[in-house]
Image (cartoon, rainbow, N blue to C red; front, side, top):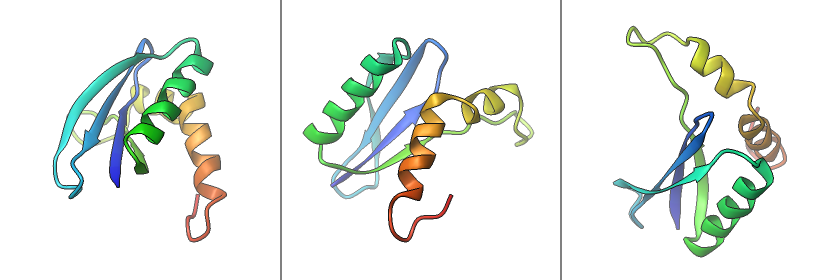
Length: 95
């Protein structure tokens, strides 16, 4: 099983995948952010093919460590909404 990491972008989503020991992540591909349905379709394919057990969404920060406009945009995106609702539906996970 592996960990899949998402780098949220308004035009593209960066995808990275861990090794089987979950120690090192390497870039896998970019997926266009729109249309969102096609993005989700490709993401689901990758999750199945690579046997992903956890999806992490990167939260952008400013150089001083604070959250800025990019983080707010990411947090309010459909991607974060989808992962939040999925996480809440899993036993032992909190929102």
